Image 1 (spheres, rainbow, N blue to C red):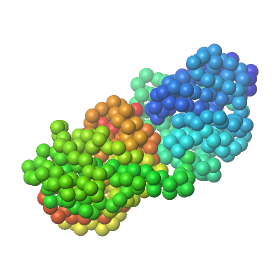
Image 2: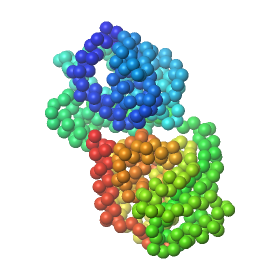
Image 3: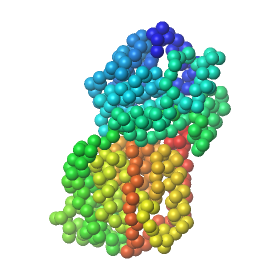
Length: 466
């Protein structure tokens, strides 16, 4: 951007303030406040200030823009630099590129330089214009509604993802937003809040965005699988006949495996059986036990996670319809970093019709589709209770829980929605569904289906239609 254009940047921002505020809202949604943030092409610094960083650096090729940024936001850091020559000296939690890729001479080199400022948990967030809007935006420039610009790069999703892949990044999320970029009372709200997120229509939106992370290093992944520890949380209610099998069939996971039983107001001898099993196997296994004061699986899961000391946290349902041996795959996915949350999927291998009737299967597929749509992440089985996540990321979800509130009685969806809000990579782990050998299901399908539908509608308002 030419230096002589700096004095007009504020004028064009004011003229298209609705668009710029929407970009800021997008980044604010994905970025945790008080993080370390690097912005490439920081302009006048408004976006960087809006995400409330604890530490920040904005770089821009225009020294006059950098000078104005320092004047406007003295509490933030800025420097005049070309990203293609930038040599990072620090690691950042988030790296922002708001339409910057349109101006770069060598995008691949920019991504290479950016990779040097990343750790495994770093998120690179890139926004760019949908190429189908090119004639509309050119017409807007012609009639004086958009700032005159030099010839731009018009990249589509495949172009950007290919360049990211070449420089060691993988895409976590992709979506579009903003169907009506000018402000008109009610009309803008209706088109952008209600209409734009809908399937098919969403393809027409102006703003596309990609969230990417560094690809996993194989050597480091193998080391983490060997060295990380694991906590398996087993909520148990009326499952006395399954408790001992939870131990005898449990695989050794990582360097150390901790097993935590949470008993929840059972009518049978589940608590007595948990105490007996702890006494019998306490020398072979690290077993912790507790009775919950609250009610429901969600409360039990949160209590178990608060007691856990492992690097990787897992949920294993005590009905053992998911075999403990399959936890190896959950641990490997999270410990290695291949996935940041592992979600069990029972719909890959055959399931007897007597164990999952067609109506239950159809309901599962419907909720899987709905959750995949809401979270922008493919989920094949929405109702499998087996999940895994790192303790570090769980603590981030817990700290951010106020965004959703205490809405989940099951404990699974609190993790799914929280992981999606943080931009974590969610992966499906295929498991074989095994019929229970003791007791009966605690699930009330119709009642809990209504609760799940209510949770999905709530999440739609908090994640999709915002």
